[in-house]
Image (cartoon, rainbow, N blue to C red; front, top):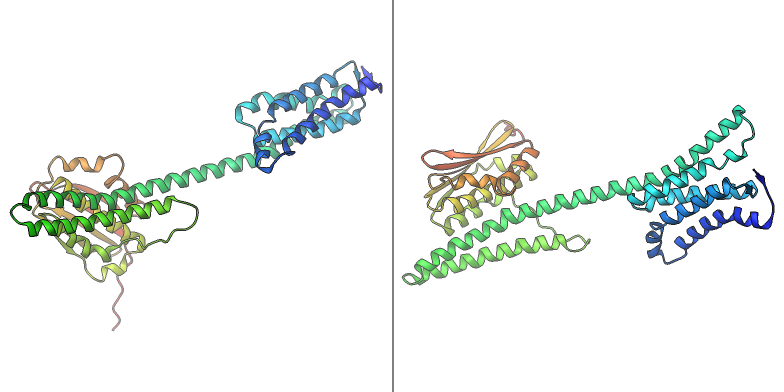
Length: 367
């Protein structure tokens, strides 16, 4: 086996290099929007170039080693590009022949078994590894970025679903109760029916506003005008509207200094918990005569209890297991803040929801 300078042999020796260079030029000689798609289609040309390289490396007559050096450089570049952009199923049949072609081409040139020659052969084993690593690192970074984006989108969808459940479901259940009340009193007391219709309109507008906020969050990358999250300072209006909308009379016990001890996140969580508790009372205990929302300050926590006197029978016990929303989601939220949330029977057929949220220590009064 030896080198030859004949025209046919030189053309055969240059063929792998020309094929590799042509493949790279084909991938980049197009519009910028098409470059990435073409780079992802270089696995098959890389395998063909590798096969040509192996054939010319071990042919009886070979061209000079100068073409082989250019060929190795181009194949290494193709290995890096394929590792970066091709699909995983294409790597299995594109990288092995390319790795062999880059690795084995010096073997026909070895005429002895000296140690420096063995070191040189081993050094070429690192070329495809380095080329593959050059392509694998940005591929891995891109994969991590996509996973992070997918996780962020999943968290956003989960948060949006919780918002819709916590607020829209509360308003819709109020509409249903008011519509049922208006149907029974429309014939005998039209004035009460008019009041019920006004409350239905108010609850419907509130539900539409919540859905509009959700839609604005889902549309476009531009930041939408954000509104502050509701907190415990808005509970008085919430409890008043709940009492006016149904037969259950709700009472709120909220010590004034307590609102200053809850963080913004804890205050928003407390509001959501009260909304969920009142909504469950309306759904599962519509005949309850009294509901109590009581906040009790502790040393480093605040305890929230939502209690209704009767009507929360076996159907209410199914509320905490409804498809991962409602109380289960609020329980996870409370635990993420460092608190707890539990629900269970209370008294004679009643029901109680208890939440413990972290709070700042009470401020000492200065003399």
